[in-house]
Length: 90
Image (cartoon, rainbow, N blue to C red):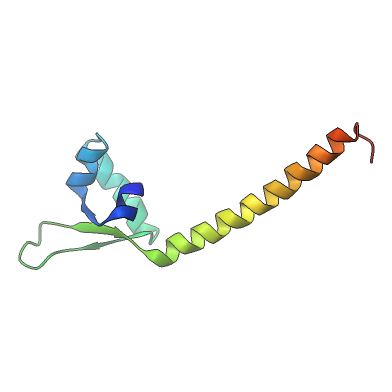
């Protein structure tokens, strides 16, 4: 995800950058494709090459959800901290 956030890449380039076997990278990319998080394109003139890129919409939705979860847990942990600092009294 981090590499794809910088620029689109071919599967082989991603596998090489991450020291992963091509088959493993292919499985990861298939999951991301099926989830709609990445898209693939085939450049004109070479149908064998696939270039993968992040799709902005799903990533933005994930970020919004993560922000909500962070706010929720910040509030919960803040309440717990206050409770502990009061010596466990209500």
